[in-house]
Length: 389
Image 1 (cartoon, one colour):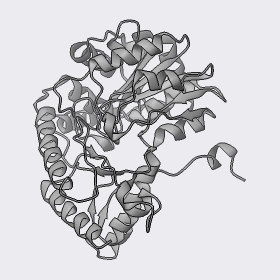
Image 2 (cartoon, helix red, strand yellow):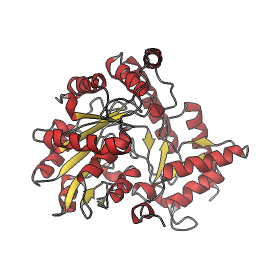
Image 3 (cartoon, rainbow, N blue to C red):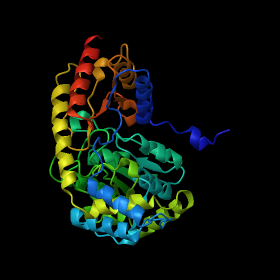
Image 4 (cartoon, rainbow, N blue to C red):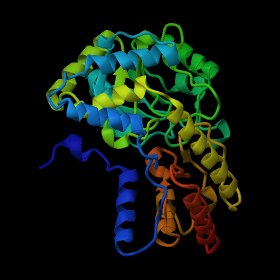
């Protein structure tokens, strides 16, 4: 019999939809897949060259559990240069993707019964990680009217004596919301009033930002010792399969994550680390070119989806997701957005993800990390499918 921890978990809705899409493709059906958050660009050439050189130089042994010092130094340089955050290499733990970095932090801090505030809409894995630690997810709701951002008053109201963590994602998956510096300062003011409350700041979409400035809550005075900054190379450098993320944290938390990781995966791939080092230290023009492309796609999908009656569409400020509210189509034939997403897949042949899994049951998530041609085709198919209802 499986453990209670495992039976309490839910499968990933994004991967489930991607799998269903692949099954239909295998039947010869043309599917426009807007379900998975993965850049469609290739990894830049100078990064691939660094990986090739690492192979030739026999970087093929186990790395230190927390990653090579040279990569950790590169992460420190990036954090200081781009975010004004000063960390030492010993405060960096490199993991098998930012997903493991977040899970490490959750498992290192959360005890059974501890509460973790996860503003909704949220990335599907956050609550599952909290459940894995036998914690309790608490999700104040942000709506399209607030640009999917919670207020300081909502945060304060969600805090109880059992609250241990706040998980904040900016730019946000799934909504594309970006918290400004002043908004983060207001949230930090609430956090600092509560001793023993910490923040995981998921900044993996940092460079896919359409408002000109990325702000980290760790940069707010008093917050660096309360915050675990999570980042990586998957989104900005189109390196999803390389599986490199990292955490920058207070020393005692970094030490705990290092100990934890040493027992269940050890250090991440040696060659991937050398590639990530080249990404962080190398030329950054590729990052800006991809960001510009994502912004053009954002503008395109917003315009097209606003032309579909019944969908409420805001303009996301970052990441590569659109999160329209589809409540007008729910309550009759479709009880949930997941049912509507399945209809769009089976009838319109467009893969989206229902907002139920993201804590926003009246919404759909569409990834526009795909070509403009696919975006145009997907919007046309969605419009036709909804018109028949």
